[in-house]
Length: 213
Image 1 (cartoon, rainbow, N blue to C red):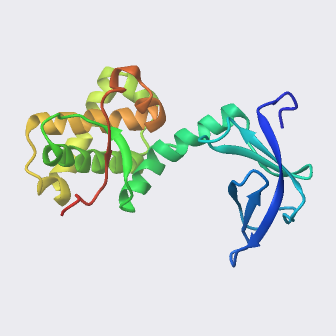
Image 2 (tube, rainbow, N blue to C red):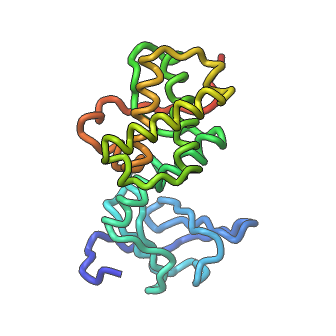
């Protein structure tokens, strides 16, 4: 814990309710409610002093101490890292796992020609990323022009046998966009890719199953 961290406030717990999963709902003396994760090291009780770390109302709580006992704590830097991981995925494999699970994931608009066009790009990018992860390409290869050319040839060969990709009837522009996106996520990771100033106005949310009314 950072002993110089002064970004906190302290309140008294006025009410406590224990949930079936071992978590707690606490009501503070200022009227606000808070959820305490299951099985904390100390059970909250009315009258306890609760210290909340964070920027205040409207911002995430990044630390909680009950009568001086740590329940959880993250520095401001660690909280920002957690926020980015929650948003974009810890790495390319995590992003793909969320995609495969049907969850909504953050990505980058690559086509600009509507949601259907974009969906084809992202389905393809996910399949390319799957191949790259399975092949465990060295990231250094992607910085070498001749090595990257060989990787692209192998991805082309994969795509010729991939029924998901073949069913899309991609244009050359869509294929190129999907390739670029997949290589970017694999090489840099989704967090770094999404934080690139060049794409800050192109953030979109996508998912494997195209939404229908």
